[in-house]
Image (tube, rainbow, N blue to C red; front, top):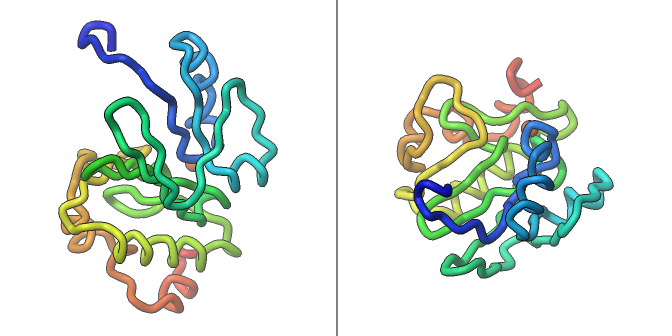
Length: 167
Ligand SMILES: [Fe+2]
C-alpha cells in the first residue's frame, strides 16, 4: 500500500472467523480507520473490536470515492457479508470461484438461498473476489461461476440439501 500510495479508508470484514479478523484491529488502528461488519455477525457472535461499525443488508455506505453495498448472505456464518463495490463483489467465504464456504448442516438452505440471491441481484459481468482460492485465480465474472461452479447451477434446493457436500 505504501509503495503504491494507497490510502486505506476502512477495513471491511466479511465474517467473524479468525482467519478474516485476526489482524483487522491492529491494521485499522495503525491507519486510524473504522472496521465494518454486519450487525447480524456482531450480535450473533458477540464481536467486540475497536472502531467497529455496523452494516445492514443493501444499505449503502460511502467510503472515500467508493459506494459500498453490503449484501448479507447467511450460510457460512449467520451474518456473512459480501461487499459490492462498483462491478466487484468481495464474497468472503460465501462464494469461491470453485465452490462455496463450508456450512453447518442446519444452514445449507440459508446458503442455497444466498447463492440464489446473488444470482438474481448481480450482473453476469460482476467480478468475484473470494476470501480463499482453491486453484483458480480470483477475479472471475459471475458468468464464469454460472458455467463452472456447481453451487451456482443448482435450481432446486433439495438437490443441495440431499447432497453429500451439502451435508
Ligand atoms: Fe470462514
